[in-house]
Image (cartoon, rainbow, N blue to C red; front, side):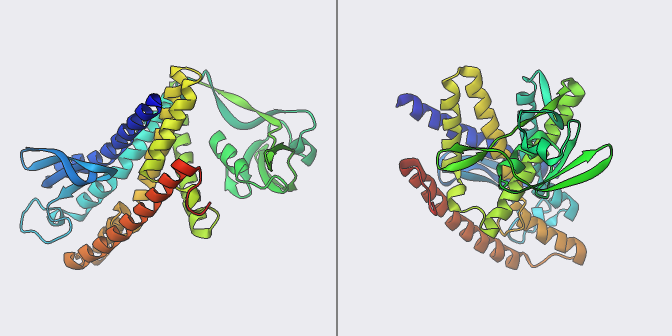
Length: 357
């Protein structure tokens, strides 16, 4: 029990680290651009601790559901020459995008830490088949390189795993590249096995390896992180189309719980597996945070980016008062959504099922 509590607290700290990295991206580029930063905060709600250094107040707040970098003239007009709104558009675009960029760069670093432990990397080229392979029966051959699964472009082994995991094993469209030519095999029926009350797909093929060296490590880290970004976008589209529901989403509490569960499972095998599980979860969360923040929604970085792009095209800004209203309304909706997701997280924590399950 004590270990579980400590793991949850540790997970909250790690989630706070991810938030810090995001907000630090805004903070660093704002300072670099000569923009006045009034407050740099981790967390939301009542202030637990703060100190003043120069013109900036640094705060730790009660609720670990986010953070912010409050810049002068960000949501209102300001006569200060160092106000956000008085800087060139391109500088403001850099500041707005910096948080998400930092998250994704952090994801690449975490991915590199994981991959550096592997003696060899996995490709998407088929090396051989297991006995009675469904793919081999369909006409796919050793040496073929996966191109797409049900239209989902496969560039890495993570793409391959993700696309097969979301496919219907009874009918899969598989495209491969053979001697420079793309061949598509329609309605391939995969082998399955019983897994509880579901039929799980059996992967009855083996792929070839890629030699690990400094160059392939950097390439693989970048490619795998891009694969995770694509998975996040695919999942967001799935939320809009109804493929996924509220029970498939997680907020800060769900993220912290996922990190602690990953650590707990890893500890059963040893300290290194536990650390690797934590790093993997952090990598997924930081990339998620970066991608979601770039969505063109009010109060998110993507929403601010849209206003800046409009200003770039019009060559004059939208009235800051009206933009502030839009972001305020977006923030209210975002907080409402966060309350719902947090409630779902708590419900899942105690009952095993979230809202919509």
